[in-house]
Image 1 (cartoon, helix red, strand yellow):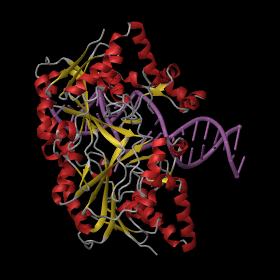
Image 2 (cartoon, protein in one colour; image 1 turned 120 degrees about the vertical axis):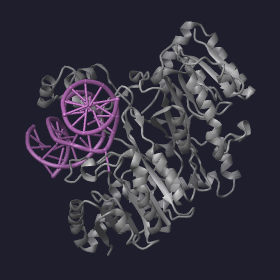
Image 3 (tube, rainbow over the protein chains, first blue to last red; image 1 turned 90 degrees about the vertical axis):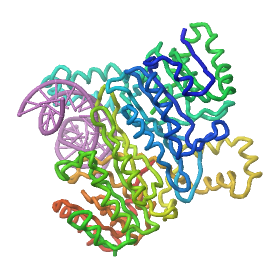
Image 4 (cartoon, rainbow over the protein chains, first blue to last red; image 1 turned 180 degrees about the vertical axis):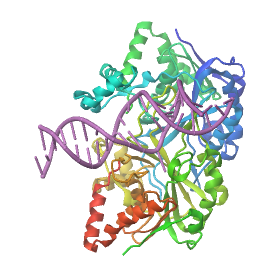
Length: 290
Length: 290
DNA sequence: GTTCCGCATGAATCGATAG
DNA sequence: ACTATCGATTCATGCGGAA
């Protein structure tokens, strides 16, 4: 049975109680600068880096050497200009010892219509990947996507040169992979994710759709691993992790959110094991990414 | 008749001869750090900001107060980590006096193939928008795109609340917009562009597809305006600008490229006006963006 | 003439090998 | 140890020749 700790309290204080090198994946979407002011007080863009760095330092401590930190964030436009605090944060985290290994783009397919005279709708967010080491765990096969028509065209008639390359190259060469393609009708994705935002039918509005943490949990963890969200909010990361048989820890300063997430988790945790397995399979099949 | 000046020489030196406040749009894709070494010598990531800033300073001078600078660039991964020189460049250009107004994402549908243990294929590039003032010229209607199924889905099932809002809100409210959508099958795009790179099977390989400068030329200029590309390369920006009845200036350090671009421009400039118009219309119809 | 299919090739990135 | 070059991977695109 996997474990799910929902902890109420100050992020940095709680983080300091977590053992070092114990977390496989950190996935979080912290309050953006000047957003969610009602609940978090609103951190001004000027102060954002200063505010975030102590948490980043603790995250660096608790993450396993082979683990990954994925940070979902997007600076907004203020007075006609984009804030630069995210850029400054990346530079500052590098100085802390983080490696900035990749920047994924989340393309929000259905961002809400809107019109401004000086800009278009903002349809993307950053997913910044940080690591402690150049070698980290990545399970690429877990996020492979269905191939298009391409495969069938390509495989239907192997050219002579393909066959020549087949034999003339080394054993691990091109030809080998053709047989791989026959076996698996899937291809690796790129660093651009096309996901729709979720409808806000739920009582609490989640900052991101379930498919987002799901994708990264698949990519960077295995069953039984531990996922941490230090700015839990609606608990999407934890609920998805739980469904995927990963242990998870969620930290949240707002007591009410903790209660809501515990309520949402309860029915899942109480299900008999077989039903849970079924749930996991269903979810996997439903997962959509283009 | 529009004008097209292809100038051979050092970028900064030539820029200094251009009158201040004379350019409506700067669209360019400079050599990225450590790329295109054969032709440009390859600027190291460490030196990149230092190398680019003098040019950026001249560009700030020649751009009209209502003009726009669009910079196409993407940092690459070296030894498992992403370079940060682009982030540093944005911060440095702000100190120069530029406003960083927007970051568009170019999603490259046909990015370079490859497989690595620690990352997926890089399928996007940055299009950084800079301005001199908060007020700049933007012709949003020029880049409106055909609406997809989304419109029909959305309109076929109007909820009760939608209908209530229809009548209860102000004239410029949601309901008004719905009727607008019915009238015109076009929608404003977002800040994510989906374009394929152009294939190198053409006689001259361009770093970016024609649709890319075309989109920004439409968005930020009108006929008779002047477009500048200070790192011309294959001259895609200038050729597209010319076709769209915009004046253009291209600066290029490699003499041979200048000659090639002049050759490509010659037949267009010699066409009788009517044929040119036809050419422009054809191009518009071919333009594809999702 | 069309449509179909083979083929070459990139602003890529890593790891191994060589100097 | 550090840098330079080379080989391997693998996909959308457009050209050109074939059917």
